[in-house]
Length: 360
Image 1 (tube, rainbow, N blue to C red):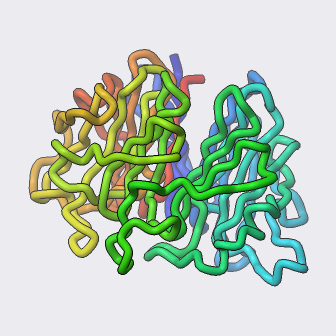
Image 2 (spheres, rainbow, N blue to C red):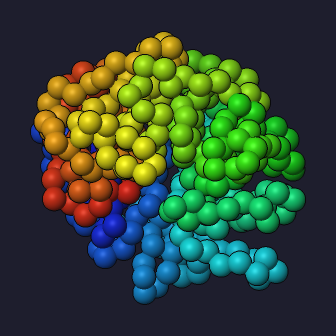
Image 3 (cartoon, rainbow, N blue to C red):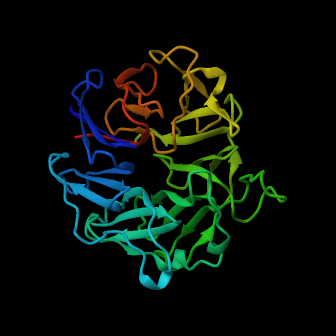
């Protein structure tokens, strides 16, 4: 078994490999001095394809792909993700790269800043704007979160390609069931404490959404204040924050094969973005958020101050499941036993913005 861990940072892409998920070989950086907000590992064709959202302060944002595990990269001469001229918008960066369902092996989605969804039908080489979402009447009222106005979550339904869910900061959750012809908000029950009406139809600052492995209509959300579960694919949401030391944080990750299993990394508050009690702890639920267990064996002892961002935590597809997270202080940690124990992958990297892992 070989596991590949792609680590996007504020100064390039690093790749780590391991045969036992304890001892890691780290190489890089690829794309030095660029910010890699989005990484993807697409295994639908047999040969893994790596995707990277590359944000260069000199050349601008782009998407690069590799079919040889990062040895060489393809980046088209033209911008693969670009707003049409009539939109009067320009791409700031790509925040998310998500392969489509298995039944559509050439479809890849990109979520961007400003908040827009793009769709590729050639494996991530070229993308087209999903105009129906861009032209949604709510869009002029979508605001910007602290990190910018961006679509950071894209969840295609695993067996029904016409069903796709996206989430953005700010704006909240939006869903389509007709292949993107129409979109409707899915935020009922998610609190937006910064509005006079704390439960608006849209405008929530949802930080991340993940889909359950066993039931595709069950979703989990980490909000800007609030951790939620939906049992009807985002139509309604209920709090599952009881048992967590805080309901503020950025990532939420589900087990790719085990139903009702998920992880999160709570922070003290939006005004105090440190781990609760300055302790490095991952929290896991194995009962769909009914209860939570703190996991810290092998992790740094207190005081611990770094933040884990929304895409800087992931799970792999190995057995037993592996879990990974990176911090804004450049540390990356790995667990090969679903969070029970942890080992370091790397230290002293630039800020970790995104991680993705897969058994090859």
